[in-house]
Length: 125
Image (cartoon, rainbow, N blue to C red; front, side, top):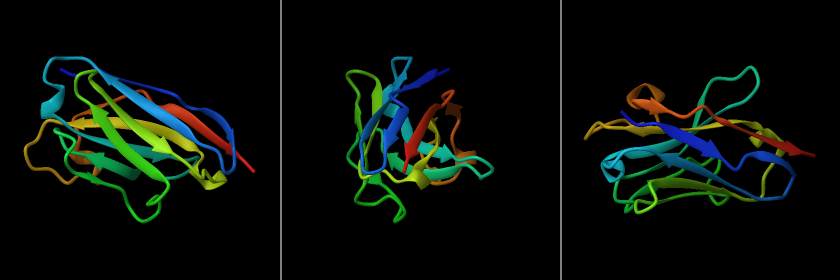
């Protein structure tokens, strides 16, 4: 079992930056692929970033490429999402997720096994 706790959300002006953190419990954190998703008001949960267990591979979709960066520190059992040049349309609840599968579809929320409770990010114009 893995418990995930996100932090770092808040209110920021357009053009600003935030760094989200996701702290995981357990001693096998490096074996989990990690992802970040977001869900805006009235919208479906949307994939925004993924990272392999070692951190050697990362992926962000074109919608956030150049603005969002995912990283992890396995010694601290933590994954990060650095967000810059934020836009009002980035407003959402941001969730981190962990997959215990060896092979999984990193952008598909159903392939993740554990989820945090989410942290609100609000970008004002």
